[in-house]
Length: 451
Ligand code: PFF
Image (cartoon, rainbow, N blue to C red; front, side, top):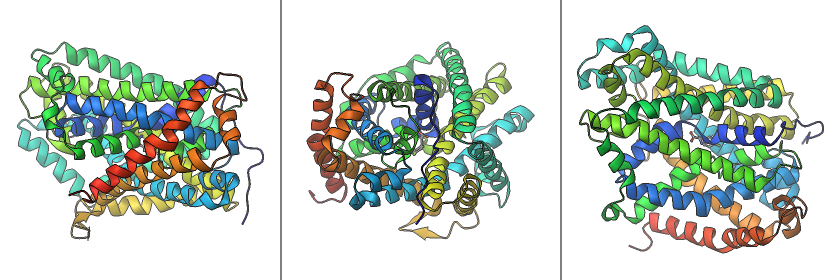
């Protein structure tokens, strides 16, 4: 086996670390998945539980992954192997999860590109009634080749940036795209807040009604937090392996989680007032963004502009996330298999394109192929967000809390003693006891052990 890690890239500075990691976290999970999950799980009460999950699980696990990455300067598999060989399976879990997520994530990313193009060319303007939007969406995703073209284009865009390298590709594009994303999102939020009758949407998002909360709600919130923060699969390990020694991991993790949560909440602020202002139920599921919203945009002045801008936002968010998933696989193949970066990038691209094609076709012609009753697309989503990521997060807690050399971990968190240690003590306690115990209980509950 070849292990290549000399001459690795390093990211520019503090801001680069935050923007690159936030680029991974902020994605379709925030703008497409978060609003419909909130809608399906009772609004404000879910939001409170979600924020608790982010603070108590998301932040500590992100810090654990950052430490593993920067302590080893390796890809996900190489990192765990370097720190303790017995734990390299955790890296493989991450590589597998990144591959499976890309399988369905590229497909949804392709849809966002198609909707952006349709907004510009006025293709959506033909629809008037809600059923027409639904028919447009369902006709498109089930089409034998159209979604494949857009998914293919998206994969190619990701490939080109990855092939340019960590600094020229990932770092440069994140520095450009993340600020742009924030500006666009703020403009949309202001626009949405000014809409008549939107107050009810905000009430739905912010007023908690705990009567809707069940143990299943907590599991969904946890899965959403893991997915949204990109933790549990080695993305943050891989990215942190490019961080500088002086980067403050605590601040970086805090800023990334804050940005990610802010973007999710702002996406809710964009979407719910709009949904309520036209009297549509907020529980319309994954199609909320692709069916409900275009209809709402169409009723507005300058509809084409708002709809184009919204789907541009989704395209940007998706791209900075697919980059990070692609990088997990590319860095792995480059360092563990000894491939050149070009070869590693092409291999990743080819493999994910094949899986993406299957996932896309499973919404149409391959709809009969089921795994445990779910089509390929849905099973990839379910398996990763609800099983592989929380399981990866659980094992990461056990490894970093109990098995990683305490001094090595502390050196990462305090930058070799440059910062005070109380934070480290609290963090280690969360990783050793609180997070694994609660994660385990939730898993068992999900398997109906207590029923
Ligand atoms: N965090 C991304 C989102 O919210 O869309 C999705 C994602 C990217 C998950 C990278 C996992 C990952 F490693």
